[in-house]
Length: 482
Image (cartoon, rainbow, N blue to C red; front, side):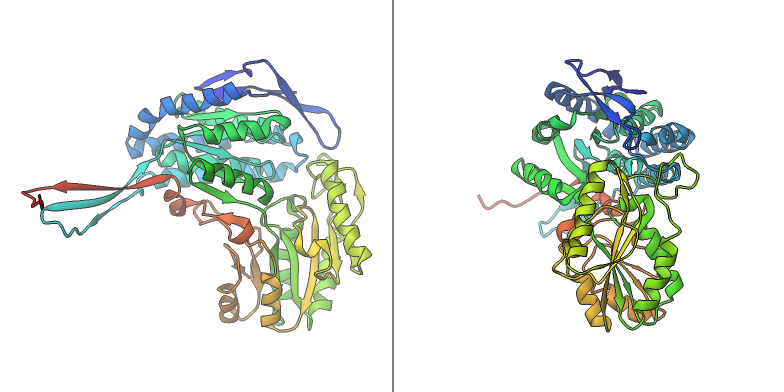
């Protein structure tokens, strides 16, 4: 069993009242981690520690920040086994956590590269003798709130670019992956970033609303970033707006994969299976809607069904398992309700659908229409639905018929045709002849509509984690009207 203390001001400590909570394996029910349950006073202390560390961290030369972040990237990869050992918190496959570590280390390296790219500009002034500049300055304390589904990637993303921009950070760990999030903080601490530069708060599930509200309300917190559900994202956005604090939000998705009539069907099938079922579909970019030209739909569905039939969800310890477990049995029950609703209203179960606790076999449904909840609602599970139409305009209309707009994909042998459609898809991300699940550390990553606003990743994140300031230098005399 992993012991998970708080990280405040460089020090591992229990909750101030000594309370803890447990995170259990979704399959066995065994306790994986015993976790400090922060109080409101602990939340205040974490922000105070970050505020105290801010002057020294923000004053570091950019190449010194770079070297410390690079050291953290190396240390994260060296401790990959520790992250994988904590995979029992979520029931995920070991290869998913190993991939998480590699990409998260890449995010730290990319953030390190950005420390010398935080640039301003000289602006011509109409005032004689006035030298005017726009400069980007560190903001102060940044609050990062990260989810459990890609726990290493998304928690690292919540803090890497804020650190590169000279801010200090409080990371509010997910209640479902607290050991992993705490380990990220320890890696950064051990890499020598400095006491209080990164602080990690964990809380009991029932305390989350109060802790989040307290952290956002703290005057020292100047920026907020959140990755998670659209429902919770709205709450975070409202709290941040109430306190006049900018928020960067990456929320839910219901990614469409468009298969045009000239597509390479074998390539589309491979991308669809990966995008829909990897990590049990518990990825914000997961392919949930297969928008297929009716002229080739039968062939596509037959090929995909054959592929999906070879994928097995099960205990990650079982060598036959490819997909692992859902986060808990409750998620399986919730998704099963969506599947049954579609079947009751006339959809056809092509394959999958068997549920055993937190294990849901990969599921493919055909004949789904707008009367069914699965047409509109994010399943966040291993479920894909086929939507048929004829012609590019009809396919595009189906792809855009969603409140979400995070990731999308288009398969066509005519790249000019696909690129023209990609520019009209209502999503922050669109891949041509590739899967909807695709992330790179230096790419602008963000959504539109109910999938949030703003972009993580590389240069795109600089504007979110710095304050643009106007500074002038008057040289020579200046005329005043009075």
